[in-house]
Length: 285
Ligand SMILES: *[C@@H]1O[C@H](CO)[C@@H](O)[C@H](O)[C@H]1NC(C)=O
Ligand SMILES: *[C@@H]1O[C@H](CO)[C@@H](O)[C@H](O)[C@H]1NC(C)=O
Ligand SMILES: *[C@@H]1O[C@H](CO)[C@@H](O)[C@H](O)[C@H]1NC(C)=O
Image (tube, rainbow, N blue to C red; front, side, top):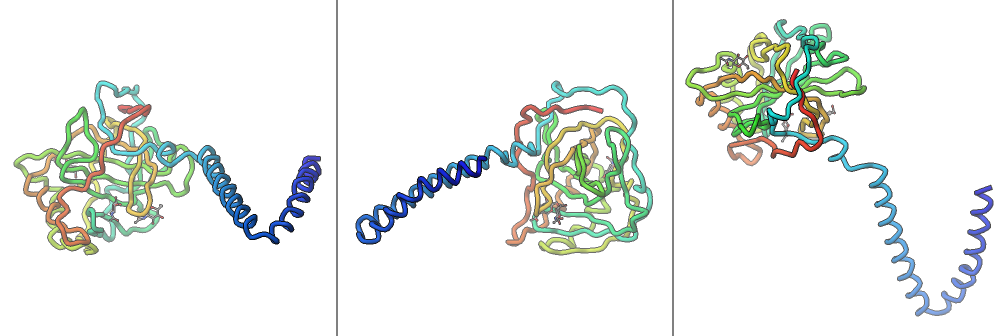
């Protein structure tokens, strides 16, 4: 019915148009005016089409509220006692550990069989979240707590085996303050940084217990939804930020600052800019 009506309207409009086009070909002046008119119509059409598309597909920024944020402790909602977060296979020695300087940070990845992949479950998680990589932010942490910035942040990305709601990615964050004592576990990373000065360098380091680097906490973490930027994609992720602070020596932090980017310039700082929390709620589990 509708199609029939449309074709009627179309014919009614088109027949005088075809007649007019016939005359137009005779006169150059009318042709110029006509093509101007057509261009204008096309431009207006494109503009309204893009406006329409924007309504249907909201920009990424509204779909995935970004990170990092300043966690205002007075606004945090404390949750009742839920189940503990569970860490599996973090105590198994991975067959290989690799560190790489990708031009903006140090990324740590592991090689291991599917049966011994470190993963998280329990707590607020409805599924297993498998270890993907750990990366570091220095020259000031990305996340802040009640306006306090930390010296270093270690971020540990995890992903589900198959994407499904409520979230596909989960990132654990540890914040470090500077003290005079060396952090022995962190030494496993910092003592290898001298070999990673040039962007693009990759090294294999002697395997170590991941539990010693990623402290397995069960409660006492802030959570909110934000993003993790992996270099190619901005991944929407649930953040779990350990509320206990860790310590590192100034000398150890300084090792990170010796790394260079692709232009051969020292990476003095690599944290993203803070974004407003907006309507998001930060929970404390
Ligand atoms: C050193 O850092 C690790 C996290 O990488 C943490 O598990 C450990 O408790 C820290 N040590 C101190 C003394 O903060
Ligand atoms: C390096 O890797 C980190 C962690 O995945 C990512 O945030 C960053 O954007 C990457 N940098 C480049 C230059 O690819
Ligand atoms: C970033 O994540 C996407 C989606 O998981 C993946 O396809 C891509 O290879 C990742 N990039 C890096 C540099 O890890």
